[in-house]
Image 1 (cartoon, helix red, strand yellow):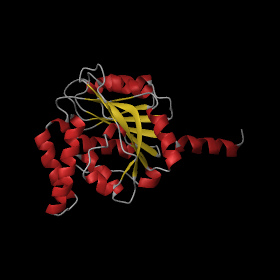
Image 2 (tube, one colour):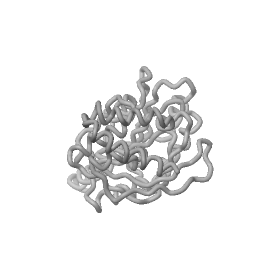
Image 3 (cartoon, rainbow, N blue to C red):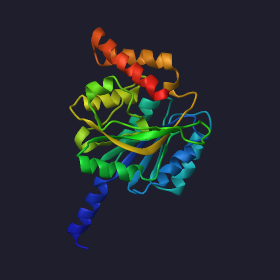
Image 4 (cartoon, rainbow, N blue to C red):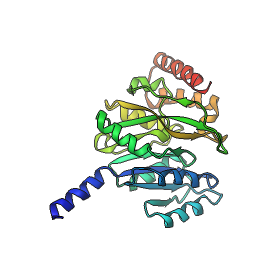
Length: 261
């Protein structure tokens, strides 16, 4: 193989390298399964950056064992607990891939998640991809009904929607630019809004590719508090007027109820 061919091969490998961003806290019981779902991916050119956020259980030790099994798994040891936004940012700062995929430490991917998203992004010239999923009980078991996604969503549509699940998202940083989370209650929702505000349209791959684990301590499980935080995001982060905030909040609430029925 010539030097030009070697260079092209290296460039091609970097072009489809996916950096998987995983914040981890108090997840020793389930993080093994999450990592195993990444190891099972049909697309093998990935790195998994797990930012362990000073758990009081043995989460850090569990992850560290996996780094010795596969060098693509990388443990980032946070010096103090800062919450998911800071953990995600620590992983994002170390990401080497053009593609960024988000996977929470208690969720699971089906084997073709990365391959399918990359193929879909290429076929649809998409910089931001999200997919369908099913929920599973905290202890595992039979998945719930399939939750599908619309073909696309823009900034104004997302303001009134709950359609994008974090662990389904993949972004092309060559198109989105650097990705950074703000330290807010819904750092992921806020991040999607900031990306779409640039004029990017998120494209939905309506395929069952993720399992969302229902845990009682999940940020989104306290519905009253979640609703208040969404309202504050409209007013404080997005600077929307009260009438616009009411309009989007009504849509958000109705869609959220329908999704959980």
